[in-house]
Image 1 (cartoon, one colour):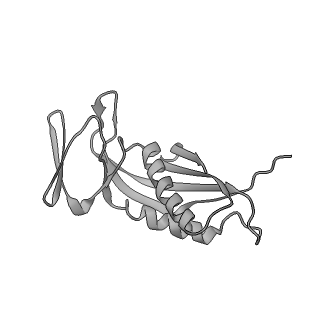
Image 2: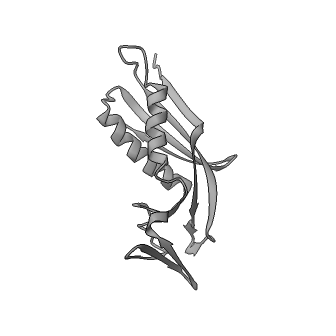
Length: 161
C-alpha cells in the first residue's frame, strides 16, 4: 500500500498585491494588477516527530518570499516579447507603441519569461525549495505552489524533489 502525507497552508496572510503585463501569442496585456492569494502544499514522509513539515514555519518562509512581490511591478526579465532596458534608477519596458518607465524600487525583476501565475508560482517554488533544503528538509517528496489571481483562477507549479 502506498501512502501520501501532505500539509497545506494558504490564503489568510499568504497574499500579495502586484502589477504585471503578461504576454501571449505575441501580444501584451495592458498594465494591471491583482490581489494574489498563495497556496502551498508539501508532501513527504513523516519526521521522527510525526510531522510532514511545521505549518508555522512553512507560512513564515512563504510569507518572507512573497513579501518581495508585494506592491511591486512583476517584471518578466527574460521576456521574449517585451523590450526591456535597465537604466540608472529605472526599468524601461516597451511593447508596440507603449513605453513604461518604472522606478527600480517599484520593480521586482524575476528571471522568468512571462509574468503569468504559473511562472510566478514556479519562482516562489524555487525560492521556497532553497529555504526548505537549507532548513534540513530531507523527507519531502513534492512541493506544489498555487498563485490565485482571482477566485477560480489559479496557476499551479509542482516539483518532485
